Amino acid sequence: MTIDPGATYRATIATSEGDVTVELDAAGAPMATNNLVSLARDGYYEGIIFHRVIDGFMIQGGDPTGTGMGGPGYAFDDELGPAEELVEREGSYVRGTLAMANSGPDTNGSQFFIVHEDAPLPPAYVVFGEVIDGMDVVDAIATTPTDEADRPLDPIEITAVTIDEGP
Image: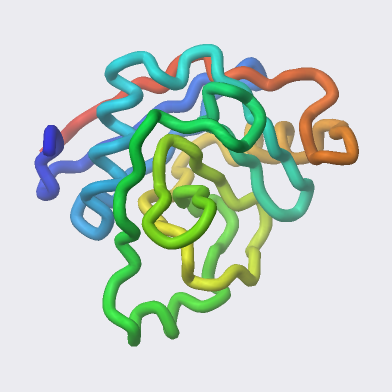
């Protein structure tokens, strides 16, 4: 692991619509945080689009193929916490939550989503951060016109993801 779970990490996701800054939960979700930090430092997200955008729900990116089917070539386990925490979290994906997108248990890779409006989702997604600046950018992305597959008509690109690490 390349991160210090006791440190504070912030990721600034620079997009063609503006910047979104998220505070990452290194203590609560160290694998997801380590994954995003490592991929960002390697430039992995540069040029990737938000391939799925649903107004009132979420924006999703991180797939290098832009299809929703791609990833980094590996998967890591869920970090969902004890069963009682899962019950408490049921339906608590609030506006600004950053979580891993997945295709089932333990299939986390590079795709993530940011919740646009409070969303009643099952506790099956690793929550590993929250937006602390740039929700206006999330709003702009979420309300962009899309096709029938929820793909923006005009691509919205991630131009860079930079990481700030603090004590």
